[in-house]
Every structure is written in structure tokens, then in C-alpha cells.
Length: 119
Image (cartoon, rainbow, N blue to C red; front, side):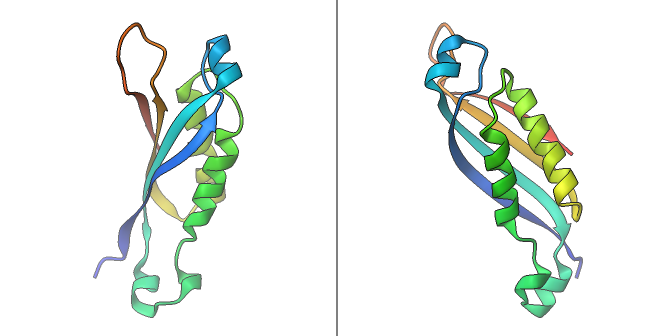
């Protein structure tokens, strides 16, 4: 059995103040963050011990901390999240972070704007 597997945290929801417009900075918006990563979970799969598994609450805490810091660009937010996860959870082999902004300020109907960054 290969030990590499995928862990996902999908639909982490935050009210945050990212955007270039004054209204976005003052009122804020709803943002969703999705995380998908790979790591060696072979030991946890064989032993059923919590200490052998990746504590996904660490990922959530990093995302939450970075979402609390306002940025003009979604790319900047995602980049900070990727760098922080990479530095604080080195056991992850590869991962991606997707940041979505609800109802972005465009001249028309648009449910979400999204960007995805990879380690």
C-alpha cells in the first residue's frame, strides 16, 4: 500500500476585507477557502493513532489567521496562505489553496471570483 493520500478542507468560510475598492475594505465580503494536500498517511492508516495523523485544525488556523489580514488582491491572500502552510507544515508533499470571493464587484451578475495557487 502506498502511504501518500489526500487531505481536504473544503468550504472554510470567512467574512473578510479583501479587495481594492473602498466599499470592500469597509463592508467586507464572504470568502471561501478550499485546501487540498498530499502527505504520507501510511503510518496513521496502519496504526490508527491520532499522533500519526496530520492535525487538519492546524491548516484551518493558518488559513483563518491569514484571512484576517486585509489584502487588495486574492492572489496575495492565497500566496500568504501557501507560504505559511509550507513553512509551518513541512510534512505536506504538495497542496493547493483556492480563495473565492462572493459576488465580486463587476458590471453584471457573477456568483464568485476565484484563484487557485499551488505549492
